[in-house]
Image 1 (cartoon, rainbow, N blue to C red):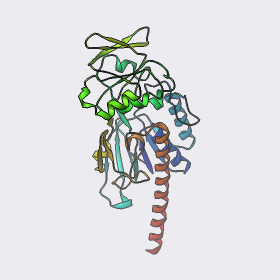
Image 2: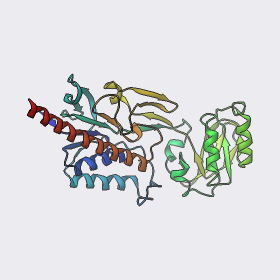
Image 3: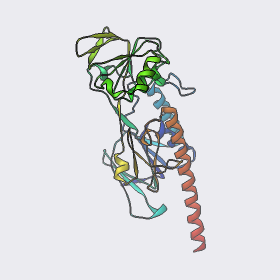
Image 4: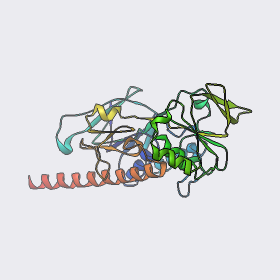
Length: 318
């Protein structure tokens, strides 16, 4: 038997829960399908979210799940295996999602809030320490790791920007070129690095030095060890866009992957299909993702209301 909802939200992070909260408060029958794969799970705390600064990601999600439950929103710990949109035109179309547990659910609106996943540089020790003293975002971790000997691992010449930004939180920064050749850096890059006091270190990074569960150094392939207590890396962002592709949403190529083309509300090129949070773009922090989800939830409620009114008027005229 297929369960029917007014909206299905795929993804139980900040964007998905925020959309579901708005829909629940609007008295809409809403389902959240959460595979339990938050991007920020390795982090002990999240920062920069007013009134939630320093809260752990797990605590934040638990609070969000409790809030949506107050308004009758159903949440299932499931994965969507497949989804399709029926052949009806306009507002008559509906989406059917097949869940890993064997059930199917159906709704006229589908929100994709599946986010993205980080692929870390294949340097020994990086994955094990990611989210602690190996981090990716100075706005997320800079304050907590301030004034320590800091390294930045280059993933491409674009990593120069990351190295320059980090100097706002530490004046002892070394830029490890790793597999980037110094010749790939522009003259402007080198001048800015020098002006910021960033030491450029050529040579491939072979691994990290850890003592007592604490990062103490970065080891180069030639055996040289640089004393460092913090290392910034640039993960490769991989959008979880499989369902969007399956439904034929128009995508735009960016340096950080393919993301859906959306309007100011979050609607994709497919009627009734919405994207929020990091499913809609690379740079959505938790606070931005929650805002996007709120906007999507409000837009869906308005669409459902107007569709019902138009249908009622059409029936009366008939």
